[in-house]
Image (cartoon, rainbow, N blue to C red):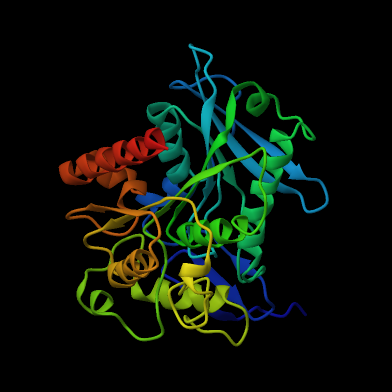
Length: 333
């Protein structure tokens, strides 16, 4: 007799956890938005000015990255964006349409090579697994820069003295963790020149005012905040953990960290804007080089929602403003 699995937990249409430890990430929300989480196959040919391919960077762990290469008519070396996707550490992957749509555009408009990491996901792989994957990807870039590993697109087109970290939502948390760790070691000949956390998933056990007052959005609800973090953090931890609260008492003091310049991007209507701002103030107090960019009238990860970008004038305008601000920060450094 086959034993019927029982649902232990589910999260807002994104994820179902069963009592045997298996996880089903089949989208169960509105069918009209399913395409945003669907995978996009890599294409070595240039489509809309960008080519992509997937590369295994660690044969033992099978850790992979997706590389976005813009057409480069001038032949100049291009900055590298090392990208960490969001999803509350539990859902989505580097090949999801929502990231493909945005980072293909960013690669083309900002004239950068984007290297997006296929991060391990919780609850099968609890934190710090995703942070370790992020740092491993940076170390792989360092090996390519040293000539110890060959990656044809990067060897031909990448400027390893201009490497930036960028991440969406929980990927923004990984940006800070990787930047902090990278500051502890010599990265020559690679140079980490900037970090761009976008709507990072910083929070505390206590509800912030913005969590109580801001509207929920398709990409962030209170249910998602609480359940994803519970599934992702090490057993016995809470939101005070350094990965989710890097400005808290359990985290290393920010003034003792060697960090590159930061561009912290936040959205005015984000549920977690209060704790994101708390991180910004902690960075300023520690005399770190940090700039703040705020998109008005939009919520968490608004730019990933293609339907809203196409249909809502303000979302479309704010997405363009975000891309231009990121491009400006890259050009500055």
